[in-house]
Image (cartoon, rainbow, N blue to C red):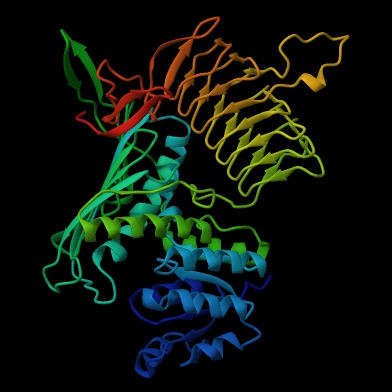
Length: 530
């Protein structure tokens, strides 16, 4: 029988005891460490085959221990993770990864340099209901996601080293960002301090995403009853994840519809449908996932980069709470939905020497990335795509099947290229005349969308967040947020960052953002009324 990797659990408090129970059940627990002799004695009485340690250094110097699971107060996480990595241990750390995003980035970099596994305990990403919910949103079963809200409420488990935002909300932040597929561009928060003047006991957080999704998170440890509920509203169906319900009712789908009658919206209610789930303890699944990562050296579902993403949002929420004002965030390559940070290249694809792929890229069947091309982090390259030589694709771009991106084409961040759309590189090509010296550059700015079968004539620039309709032929520069259609393409309207067409007042009917016109196109001026 193959031996599981050996683990030491550091911290024998409330959550540490749960980790001890699960790692022991999985046959991996070798040692428990806690600075309190009485707490250590009590937990070891139930596990006579497990060693005890009062000092963290005893764990780090034990050569037979492959990994540590850290369940200490959050203020100690950063330093303990660093010590464990430097000691050559793989690390599981309870949320949050640490209390500072910059420190978190350093820990991620250190783990990568030392080839160590670093996993953050965002438990809900191991819950069968959340995994099924993510699958449904990815496959479009709910339609376009419109808003998400979560309540995590209880009475008790009061903390003094962290407020309720940092104690309760990381799980919900992690899940909401994963479902939305991006970090928010703006957060707001307010709360109440009732038991201690500087520690919030209840907070409400609002998240606004560039794709039009809005979310709010309500957390409190001064609530008359326990509630752990996540609601996802799409334009086709609504989903409710209630973690306090029996397994048969944990995930429900509501196929409600809205119909218009004489310009009045009418709600048509439908019966809830239960989503079948395999009953299993999420923490046991999480511990087993960590052991699998340690044994097989594959990146965790909630790796350090995912932990940093959540940290950045929590930090912005804390700033919004303290300042009582909205805080804006800037998306970065390192902060993406929870998925592997290792690039994937299908066996039929070719990535030439001299080409670079950013972290988390996926290159699918029969695609070809030529030398000198640079592909940013988190890009998805579909089937039969040719890139380069010396083309540039920014972070987070999605290039659908049968697209060629020639030398001289530059895509900024988060550009979408629809199936079989075309970039040209010369104005008047002939098969029998070489015109490589006449290549003209094409620039597609951040967030632009190019529809299926559209053609972009070289030598022009497409503005930020513009939308080129399917089959359009673009023969000139395109303004920011312009909606283009036809041959030759002309502007037929304006679109929001979330890709919804603006009304006559230049306000988005979906997310409420307002715009004003400039010489370069539209610029955002703030939120409006939805």
